[in-house]
Length: 321
Image (cartoon, rainbow, N blue to C red; front, side, top):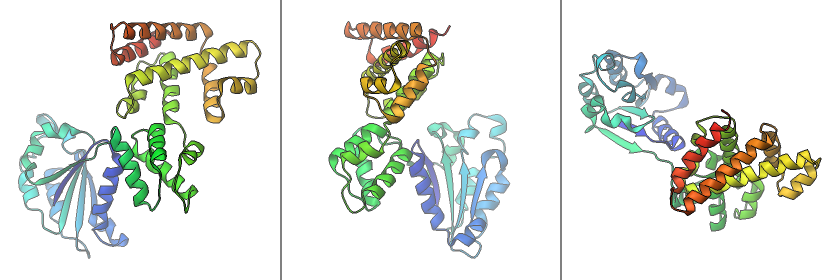
């Protein structure tokens, strides 16, 4: 059987791959029957030999090739010698599986993929989006033998977002903590770090330090359930906190009193104090002015939320020039 797995949900891809590996046989035989190859280090003869070899003391054999098609796009050297790919794959014994793992969907435009498109079982593993995040959390908790109420599901989705690796880690921790009972919102608030706030810390810090790639650090929001307007509001809040902290430190206010004033504790307070040392008060005030201007343009209809967010992050970076 020929498989092709792709998408941004790396956890699900790993688990689906592990399921294929588990079919190979016992652990002591897998070194002989699970073969991992890379497009840059193999030629057609080596691939043909790998997929046609019979399993060693096992019922099945699995060959895994990473980014085969994405590294073979275009013509010339990358394509040389691979005109018989279909013939190679058509002659795979029924005991053997061939898995292509692609990190992106560019394989769809590959002429090499078109050779075997009819033969392959193609599965996309996409990060859950919107309401699908809640369903993913509920199913994951149930699969692990736990129980979670609806409010806790919504709270966990809000704090962590669509990153399945992070969600799985939090779910493991929550199930262990709430052994024998249902996970509730109080458990989430106690044990789960607000990834939204952490990402906003990172985005604002990157922008104020002149990193033009700050937009990348908020991609998890845009790919999840949050709107550009919500992200702008969180950035605005973060800049206000930084200004308050900067002015309070200049006035000799203790960190303990500042913590009470801002209603921030633990990690969030530590990150704010770490970040505020990197920026001057004049830069922070300029950032606040840019935010106010962006807000005015959105309300007047001159800019959409998304365009305002993109322009703002670029303007924040320019404060360092």
